[in-house]
Amino acid sequence: MHSRFLTLAYIISVLLTTTLSGYASEQKGGVTIGELTATTSEENLILFCTLKNSFTEEMIEILHSGIPLHFTFSIELHKTAENWPAELMTALTFQHTMVFDTLKASYKVTVEEEKNKTYSFHSLLEAQNVINEINGAKIVELSQLIPDKLYKLMVRAELYKKTLPMGLRDVFPFFSWGDVETDWHSIEFKY
Image (tube, rainbow, N blue to C red; front, side, top):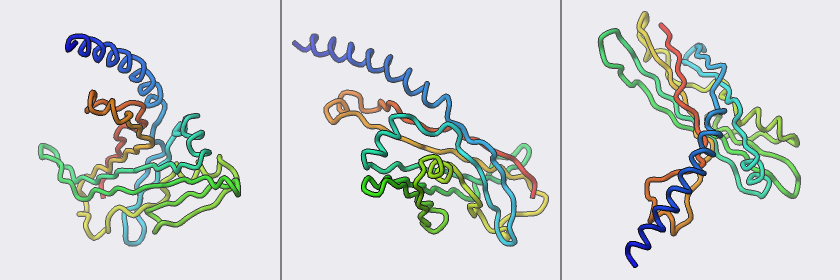
């Protein structure tokens, strides 16, 4: 009995791993961060970037069923020096959330780094443009940067996370499938 269970669990894990790892790598392969730019305002270092290929058909179906989509952006600023370990200066995380109002057939996008400002659209494409962009996010005050020093600004995004059904979580506790996220993208600059 015990060996049957182990054999069955092994077969299920091989099937899930083979099927779902292909799905996850197919989805992750297309999502990137582009147009990564850091510049300054009068008082702050600010960030601009755009997600590319961020939506899947499944995500759009889920959105249209009334479930919100959350894109989580992680940002790190490091002070770097040759032959010296990088020093983390700040780490920020914020979300962009898209909701589809099924009664009004409209989209709302809330942008956390803009003091939770909400934008409304009737077009999915326009809503996607806003949820995909970081447009002038304040990273750190310029007074915290030292002139003529090197810095590295890193960004990544987690777009979609799925979880296994409750019964399978116990069998595969460290297995994640179908997650859509980017790799870390970075730019280096001298202030």
